[in-house]
Image (cartoon, rainbow, N blue to C red; front, side):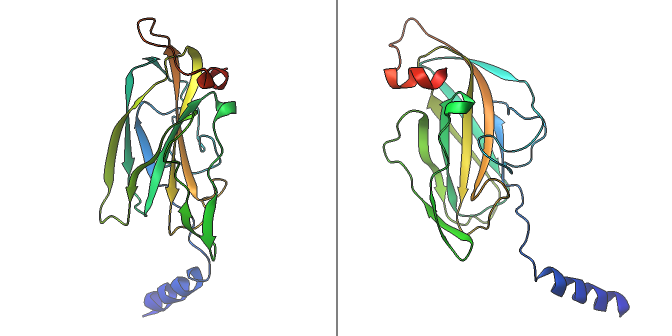
Length: 192
């Protein structure tokens, strides 16, 4: 009886405080820029954790598979961008109500450095979900660029340091494919 009373008292006490944000997704491919995955928690551009120092070599103008595993499900969507870390775009503005996210804008015609926006739009799912898509890497040379994958979570409280987003990155070394057309000049300053 004492144990049950203690449990009920602690449950009631815990209800007075908002739940801490839990991690939400892992970047499976390309390999993460972090060795310690924390589900994307933490500040942009890449969340928190220890650097892996893994740099994936890719060729410009070709498709790169991006694989994710979402294990804490909330309605939302993903955005994928590519640039040097200093040139990655800020998180988009979020409409919120009573400290919870409602919506975030999706670029229907994304421009550099965004490769895809509104990827894997979903409502509340009943189980964990794997997502995969190919993105075409611009045909430019970049010694160390960052592929950033962010997840906007609707109906969600703040992720400490990350707002209403979870952030993951992979570091890429991009070589120019001389047999393919060069990328739009808009990409060149983003890769330096």
